[in-house]
Image (tube, rainbow, N blue to C red; front, side, top):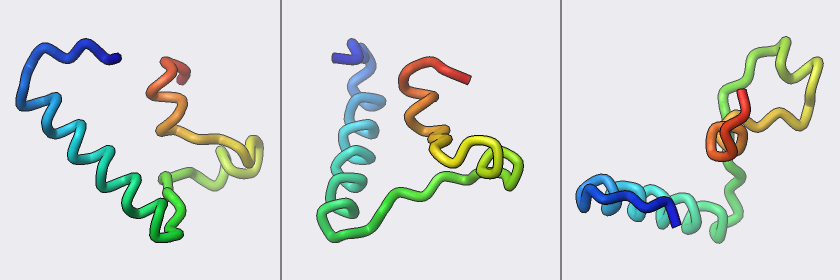
Length: 56
């Protein structure tokens, strides 16, 4: 899906995603660092998602 050609980078990404899924399955919610200004002006701001979809 991401067309990662480096095997090590692909492995690291797989491990990170697996850990993320395990934490969510255990009922933990992801936390992203947000400034008070970002949260005040846009409570739905999600920097991780924005990074993946190419938004700033």
